[in-house]
Length: 341
Ligand SMILES: NC(=O)c1ccc[n+]([C@@H]2O[C@H](COP(=O)([O-])OP(=O)(O)OC[C@H]3O[C@@H](n4cnc5c(N)ncnc54)[C@H](O)[C@@H]3O)[C@@H](O)[C@H]2O)c1
Image (tube, rainbow, N blue to C red):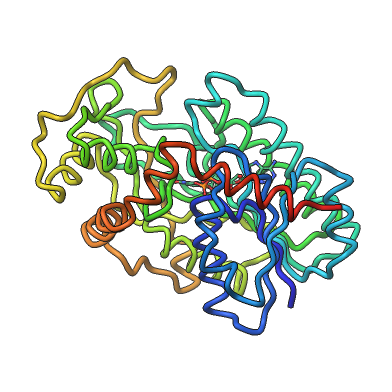
């Protein structure tokens, strides 16, 4: 089967491409990625060595390019990771978020309908539910909880979720949706909390933490996220939303403290900075629907954090390439040679 993975040069998409190439050696994977600042072709170095993997540079919101791509392949599955994904950037400028996360998803959905794609899966986020008060340690967001996104990023993801549901109902597209908690692992762009913390601490630089650091997030290893998507592709019901969470919820203070502990650094590196506007307080999901399909996380946060810290320590070159902007030269080479003609 030919499978389209969009946003595969980013953090989670690149892990999913590796996962699929390993798990389904008879399938062919096509990766469509615009190579924004968040895309990094170094993330796909392993995949590019596999004869079953093809990289195409292009924009999911570019109707003409998407149509050409769908005409030159026969995709049995389309899995959408492509997104603008950083909340702070959405606060500074929401426009790219609406273009990619909403219009781009609509473009992909329409192409799937026109080309009779058998299966579409969309990667969403637990942030679409909004937040809970700090002191509410009981409530968990279920798939039917109301959508109350706080940031422009989360609002754009919620809009896409509604579009996926509408294409399923109106056109009979077999689509599923997963709303995942915060992921961690290697290759995450160092603007997100965990890689920021590791890269700053490695250089004995202050580690910025928003507000008072009380904000609670649920954390999942990226490998467990890939396993969850695979299971939903195999066993999911059309039109169904699946939460994907580990149940391991902890404050940013506790998380950063743990990372500093693993690195043998002092907590005095923590520097509290003015809070993010509209900062969500607490997230926690109920993922029993996915667990009923047979999924359980295999990696605990303690194991996964230690492994993640080790990855950044062992891959200093990757980090340097990103922080210096050198990776953009490699991206430009692929953009010039692999774009949709
Ligand atoms: N990282 C997390 O903790 C997390 C948690 C839950 C859900 N998600 C969702 O998972 C998905 C992947 O997240 P990530 O952390 O890997 O993001 P990322 O920012 O690391 O990667 C996004 C990728 O999408 C590509 N892209 C952006 N705009 C594009 C466009 N118009 N056309 C084609 N490609 C485009 C980028 O070049 C990049 O390679 C996103 O949809 C995000 O909302 C992420």
